Structure formats: C-alpha cells, structure tokens
Image 1: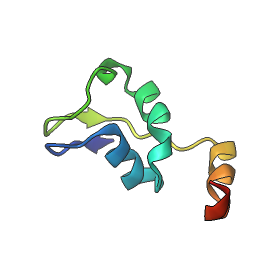
Image 2: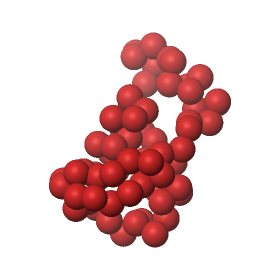
Image 3: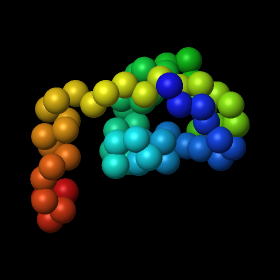
Length: 66
C-alpha cells in the first residue's frame, strides 16, 4: 500500500516504486476506482502490485534499447 501525498501522479508513483514511469498501466489496473484521477490529493491509499516477471526482464535492457 502507498498513501499519496498532494500532487502525486501515476507516473511519479510508478517512478518511485518501479524505477520507471512506464508502468502506470499496472498501477491503474490495481486501483481502477481512481482511473479518472490525474493529480492525487494527500492520503489516498493505493495498492502497489509487484511487477510481472516478464516486465522486470524488459526493464533490464540497456538504456540505448529503450
């Protein structure tokens, strides 16, 4: 679980937990009731799921492959 701070966005949270902004889809799927939220207010509890194994492998590509 993650409790948002004022001004959090999906990409900020993704970067914080997964090291990349590219995983907002996983966060949104796990927190579908907040799908229309762009900028979070403070105190919203979100579920932070583990990344699927195939996603972790893709994240290990060298930066020039992104």
